[in-house]
Image (cartoon, rainbow, N blue to C red; front, top):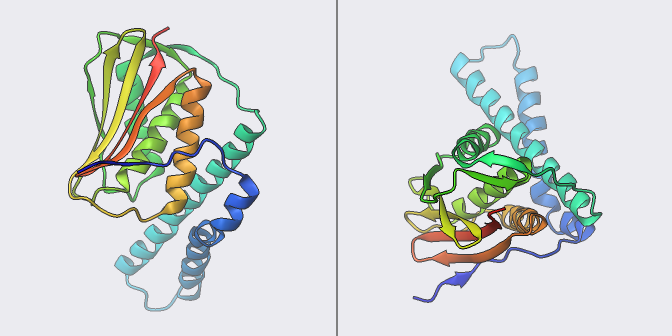
Length: 221
């Protein structure tokens, strides 16, 4: 079957984006407010400990979600105003991938995925901006993860290409329909923009028969 291209926007009008996605942007805040109120109202009443833990978990996950969305909006604004500045340095590729996976789990505690990575490059180091590249990987994990069910896998592969270091972020497993157009647009835009700011290029972004895949390349030096 022919694969369907993924839309990684080249530009997002921030005001229009907020207007279009207002409901989903408010959703985690509404969850935090609602469950916090429930917890406060039930203090001192018969409130089973396991139920308290579950409700506090809901508050925590939605607080993390709200922070992720707010950081995304700030990044979009700064990118649109050309205020994001790179600080390139020599990065150890293995360490970068390890830290990116840890960072992903930290900001997505409710995600069922545990991203893994495979290194097939002869390069040990890459000259790039660490924060930008970590954001790229985090954004693309979130995008491809939308296309596979919770039992699927998300893998980052790093390979050689003349003059380039090629990253592929692939989600594979039982095919699922994306749940959040908000994440697809926001994270797709952020990922593309931060690749291109580092003189990189998007080489592939598509739905596959069993998930989705995004490939990008950064200059080796």
